[in-house]
Image 1 (tube, rainbow, N blue to C red):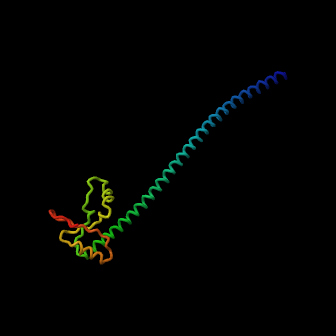
Image 2: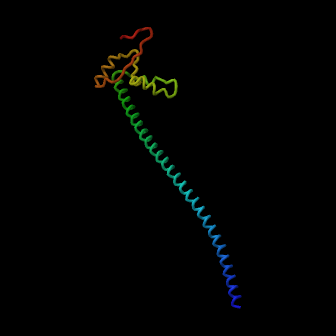
Amino acid sequence: DERAVRERELAEAEEEARQAAERLAVLVERATRGEVALSQAEASVAEALALEAAVTERLRAHETELAARGERQRFLGELAAAEAAGRQQLVERLRAAGVADPAFLGDRLQARRRGWERSLDLYLGELVDAVLLGPDADPLAVADALAADGDAGAVLLQPVASGTSAAP
């Protein structure tokens, strides 16, 4: 009888060992799948971090560019305001010199193609700001009046009547 009990115990132990081996195989399979999923998750996280770094770098570059453009816009605004104030002062001095309604060469010029304004500025330089005097104005008297104010920096242009030659 003892032998039968031991055989039965051995059979039960073998069955439990077989079941434990099956459970162990299932657990090993789950662990392997978990490792694969973990590896995939780690790769996804690494990819997301790389993407975030690239986006952050692009964002910083855009912020830097935006700040530079803002600074340039501010500078150009200040430059335009200073130019307008300078022109207004010149207009007032010209009126005091007897030029009632001063006109400027740059206001009369038109570039035939968009973007050529820069070319006009480049080739004409200070002549763009030249004052156009009427045919009846005395350019020497205007120049003397401007020089009396301490500024002889204005360029004065006077059209020549057709059919006459300009004095050298």
